[in-house]
Structures are given as C-alpha cells and as structure tokens.
Image (cartoon, rainbow, N blue to C red; front, side, top):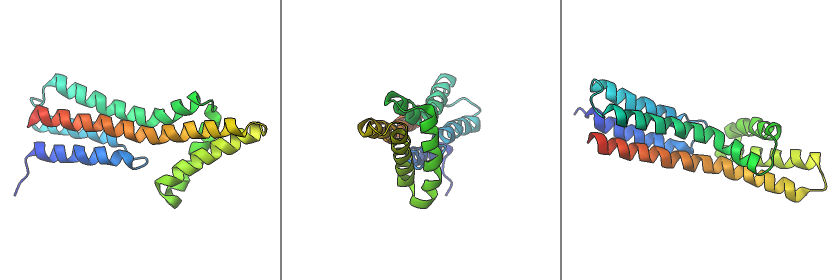
Length: 160
C-alpha cells in the first residue's frame, strides 16, 4: 500500500515536532526540508508559495529560537557569554553520559560554579544565574515544539 506524499510529510512533521525535546536534533531544519520536499513533489503548486514561505520561515525560526533561547535567558539572568559558553561545553558531553538531563546538570552546575568562583560572597546570585540558564535551555525545547506543531497543523490544513 502506497502512502500519499501529504500523509508522509504530515507524519514526518509530527515526528520532527516530538524530536524538539531531543538535544541537538535539527528539528526545525528537518521540518523546513520536509515542507520543501513535499512542495517539490507537487511542482511547487501545493501548498501555495506564500504558505510554503511561511511554513519554512517558522520552521527555521524554531531552530533559531532553540539555539538562542538558552543564551538569551542566561544573559537576562546576568551570566556572561563566557560562562554560558563554558556551561554549554560541559553540558554537551554530559548528554552522552547522562542523557538530556546531563546537559541541564552541566550547564546549570557550571554556571553556578563559575559565578561562585568569580564572587564567593554571592551564592544567591550564582544560583539565580544558573536557574535562568537552565530555564532557558528547557524553555527552548518547548518553544521549538510549539512552533513546529503550528507548522504541522498549518501544513496539514493547507494540503489535506
């Protein structure tokens, strides 16, 4: 039994939405490629070019939001770019040891320790900065998932 391209593309968009919670999965880029791939099977007649552009734009913005959310939130909490960079560098390898929680532990722990080492008299400041960084990292997955869910719904409404 052959599956129509629209149903396969819709299923893939649902998978990419769910993969937003997998660290380092390029979910937004994969969603954009899925939408463009489907459009190419129809000779770019379905969905309309305006809808295609909007779906690709939202997909790529979801990827950008996922990448920038943690850094922006960490900066709002007062952590330096250097500290966030070190935290990310520690968190990434921990993903392979502890799973997704490893990134959170590595990022939050490193931001806390670096901030305390810079000013030992302010552990509350260090805890606040670490909390902001962790919340930003966790929120980025939710933001990306919501944006990609809207792409899946929009695509489905446009082609089915």
